[in-house]
Amino acid sequence: MHVENITLGYGADAPVVTGLTLEVPAGQLTAVVGPNGSGKSTLLRGMSRLLTPHSGQVLLDGKDIHKLPARELARKLGVLPQGPVTPEGITAAELVSRGRHPHRGLFGRLTSDDDTAIDEALAAVELTELRERPVDQLSGGQRQRVWIAMVLAQGTQHLLLDEPTTYLDLAHAVDVMNVVHAATASGRTVVAVLHDLTLAAQYADHLVVMAEGRIAAEGRPVDVLTEKLLGEVFGLQATVVEVRGAPVVVPDRRLAG
Ligand SMILES: Nc1ncnc2c1ncn2[C@@H]1O[C@H](COP(=O)(O)OP(=O)(O)OP(=O)(O)O)[C@@H](O)[C@H]1O
Picture: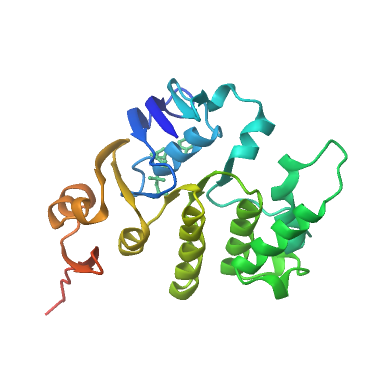
């Protein structure tokens, strides 16, 4: 996936992302981090056709995604947007089955391939036992995992995930990141917006740091996530230590008294 000189914004407002170019490494996990409002979600929306760019292109296998038929794109690119709205009364399994839509014929029923993909996706996020529960009766974290399962069931080569670990406790966040990372082991390309810098650094092959609609730095987490960068981009005073070759961010405390 390649983003070429893209400018994105909303209506007549000043653009949010300006002239951004990004080569997404194939078969790897790219994490996008940055302060609130730096344009991470906007970038992901532009990369997934939820937002049409003012200028520039997003290329998938060399083709402009904004020119591909929707169905063809859905077979190649799975998207977890921020805060997806759950249809009322739908069960977990039904929601996950929607991930199979792009693979079905016009009036197609679910095939055994579809059933397998749905079962595997539910198992991957450990929700097999809750599969018949209405999604609106699940906890925030369980609901988030159902949505991730839906995107996994879509079986696409490319995945864009906006904050897949929001609402998850650390153990479940790690479970989800393990699942997401496993997708790259089978050759899939993943781009995930993440807020937890340490989690991002532990899992990302490639780290992109955004600031004010541009890429402030990118590369291996250990090269990118420095104390200097945290100060400059996040306004955060922190100590960075290395664990298993990846940076861990320890914010400096300012205790009263
Ligand atoms: N639908 C929208 N309409 C108008 N402006 C928007 C819309 N969505 C986002 N923006 C603006 O675009 C800017 C970047 O927002 P965006 O959500 O891309 O940032 P972000 O880096 O993902 O932030 P966060 O970490 O808070 O999720 C913000 O100033 C925001 O107000």
